[in-house]
Amino acid sequence: MEEKRQRHYDAEFKKEVLKMTMEGKSVVDVARDLGILPERIYK
Image (cartoon, rainbow, N blue to C red; front, side, top):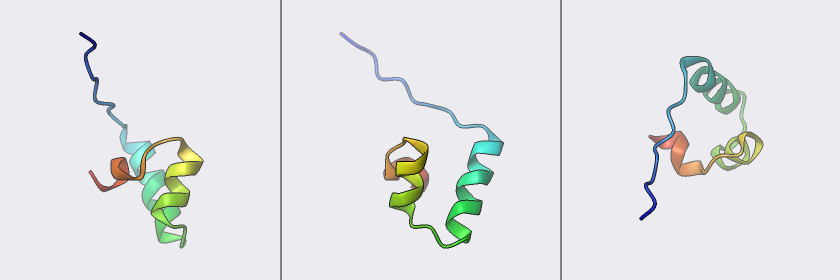
């Protein structure tokens, strides 16, 4: 059975996500640019 691993994002990554959204990019666009699922941004 395959284990699901939760990714952990460092503080710099989280700051970059916040910066991008504060600049007016949608969560979907930010997620697409970073190669992650939009749901990851809300956690």
